[in-house]
Length: 136
Image (cartoon, rainbow, N blue to C red):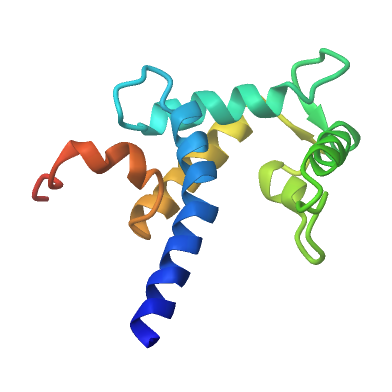
């Protein structure tokens, strides 16, 4: 019985998490080769963030960022516009000038890719066909 419950729980987790994760992976894999490189993640993150630049000045203000997060929360009700205690804008605004530039967004993407690679999670589904990792 315990094995049956464990198998059912694993199946529920796999079907609940994997499709969204795979979809995000497919979107990040810009050249569709089954691998997500740091450059692909960087290009996607910069393009996604810069869509929030509504006044066209080449940078995202706190108000533009918050409006983007609010729109995202409306499309995906399970998401919160900003988690309590987390100021994502401040993490992205590296020089603290009140704006996020494409360079700052690119640096954030590099940090994110490095964190996920170090945790051995990242975009694992896209890399699953790559075979074993090369020795370091």
